[in-house]
Length: 263
Ligand code: NAP
Image (cartoon, rainbow, N blue to C red; front, side, top):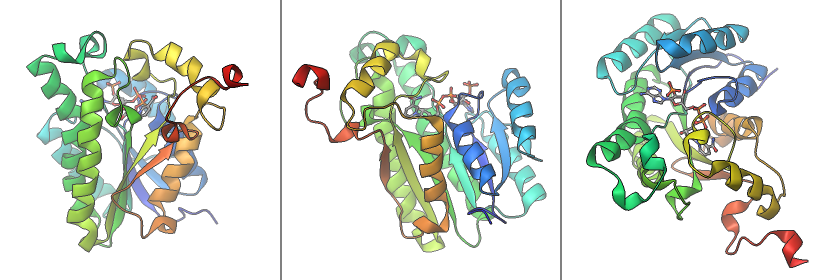
């Protein structure tokens, strides 16, 4: 019997088969979860629908998280289909390309708002909408990156958004703890996805990563999926408000000198 037998939940942020959200979905499905999916816009439907159908999803809804009416409609539909849910995965982020290039000091007011709205406020809005569907408690997981704590060149406004996302995780965990709803973040190492390809210099950083990370390897979507499954399951029932690193140990380093240059 799987860890998620009899459990239901919603996954936001599958764009294609390389998405971290899809890595999480595959693990949850293997463990017996019933999954519903939401995707950003009509362009994505042709990629997301076949993936969602391959894991037997009966809920596949469009939801642009910048629109309150989309969020309202999506959760009303989820209530109709599922009644209650046990978990929610938030794997959504966006910043304008010009803000992931150049200097942070040049971030425009509009670019700052867009990144904060889609990458941070969406967690607050989705969590608020999910609460009535979690009368017996639940677990929510979002995705963050180390650029929230330390400067990662070109991550710029997204690093600032991730810092706000991690702070939001703590405030949401505090608000919802009495309802037995847990909120946590996974800070993942670099993974080749559509979003990652928008960050200038990502390829070089990706190549360099296993030369310095203590576990000497790349992190995969499935690695994040397994950690997310733990956080979303009852095995993590006393864990909330945390940022858990799934980064081959990269965050513990004070100096990132390639190991072959040290030997
Ligand atoms: P991805 O496959 O491109 O997923 C990002 C998702 O966010 C896409 O489905 C995207 O849809 C969605 N999104 C953007 N704007 C939206 C909106 N207005 N409404 C609804 N959805 C919207 O990339 P990913 O790397 O798996 O990203 C998932 C999460 O992991 C993000 O929070 C990212 O910051 C985080 N993360 C990634 C890495 C990495 O190295 N890849 C590392 C650490 C953390 P569209 O394609 O339509 O925009």
